[in-house]
Length: 131
View 1 (cartoon, one colour):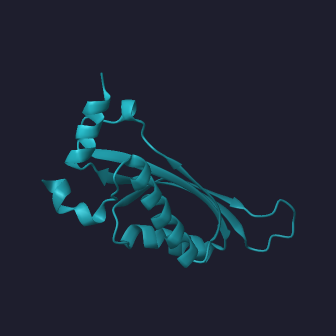
View 2 (view 1 turned 90 degrees about the vertical axis):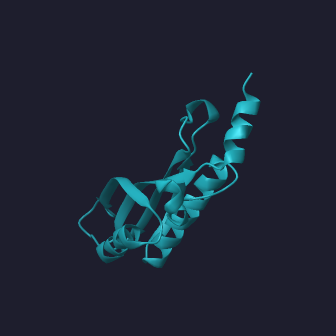
View 3 (view 1 turned 45 degrees about the vertical axis):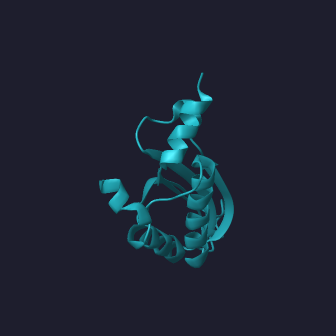
């Protein structure tokens, strides 16, 4: 019941792949709006055998972007105060250049987790596919 009450904060879709794509789109949009230049987005979708018996799917997306420290801070703030329920599981911030001519650009990598509420039809499809 608690998850149903929070449904608007969770990610949706007909299946975990669609829900993962929604999470990736959400995180990518927030990164771009924060002033980061997105370089890579990679989703991690639970496969059927790894899905839990619960009514939710754990989703993950890893993004790599470049920008200044203010853009990184703005992105983190957007994740924290945004309309969706997400958790940043890992952050790596690396100086953009390796020589002495540092221009303030950072390479930022973050793994962001979200939840997708599994619809009753989703669980039916899983049990029908199993022998």
